[in-house]
Amino acid sequence: MNTGSTRKIIMLVDDDAVTLAAGKEMLKSAYRVYPIFSGELLLDLLEHILPDLILLDIEMPGMTGYEIIARLKAKPKWRDIPVIFLTARADEDSELEGLSMGAADYVTKPFSAPLLLKRIENQLLVAASRKQLEHFNASLQNMVNEKIREIVSLQNSIIGVVTDLVEFRDGATGGHINRTETYMRLMVEKMLEEGVYQEETANWNIEHLVSSSQLHDIGKLGISDAILNKNGKLTPEEFEIMKKHVEIGVQAIRKIEDNLQEKMVDSSFLRYARMIVGSHHEKWDGSGYPLGLRGKDIPLEGRLMAIADVYDALISSRSYKRPLPTDEARQIIENGSGSHFDPLLVDIFTKVADRFADTARNAVYR
Image (tube, rainbow, N blue to C red; front, side, top):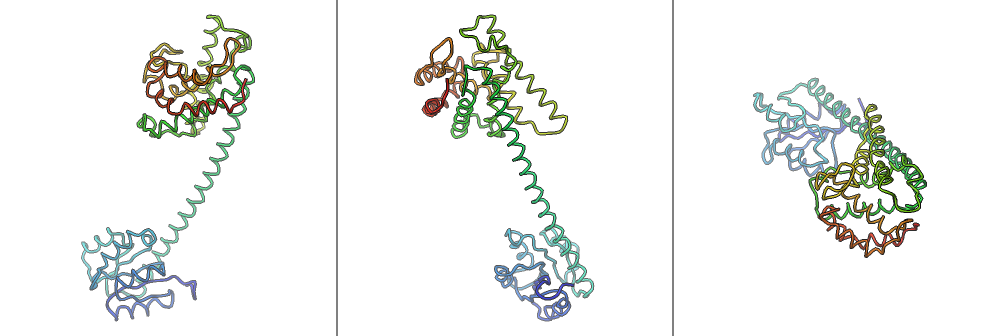
């Protein structure tokens, strides 16, 4: 047994002086014992000293053992202290009631020293095992969190490389990806603040959604330079080829998703990316591509991206057009409410349009 100050603390609570004296005599060689003659005194003492275990009589004047254990279980810093009921009651109902209220064990009076010591030893072992498990779980969670941070860092690095490749090949859209990511964040945060589409967004991972928007044009890596960097407006035939960047992007992301699913790796980030890539050229009235989806059949992620993508295209310079002023771009987005864009999201856009304009003015782009 432990000796000195390292010994476990037992609080023995009973209104009977004989029981207190006998109990202390039985336990003092193995534990530091605090004899306490009332529940009220126990609660006062617990504010200063936390025991490793409490031996608690049930039938006492003032607060009963049942009332005391209810108080213990209601307070976070006390609720995990093991409680063994000591009582003269030997009926099954009383024992069941005590255990139901959270008692760790139930010992009837008169009790023998060997039995009581063994019951206490068992409960202290259980409590120690629980603390070790909690410590292990906390350490494991820290390891998981660190691994998640490493994965997110790697993920962001890969995204950065891919988006740089897209913008390197599509020379006319320098800075487009970073700006549209900012627009998406502004829209999503305002949408959540306003409570728009609460049910649809209840389980969203906002950081994954916003980061994945950087991949919205990944399919352009599969479009020839002759079309991608044409100095002038595309012909109808060339535009049909350009439109295939959506399908190319979706297929690329699906391949990565399938590989991760086989390895049982979470791919929620890629699900957002696939929704955005596949639907950001759809239009509210059904005249978009590639599927001609209409209204709320278009994934919400794509409806958000559509506004961010079109706005940035309007304020950017192209070989076939001049960049529009931000006020004019804003008007075009608002005029597209109910035809090109989701009306509710256009309302959200209007509320953050000034911040869109600030992003455009502060960005460096061609």
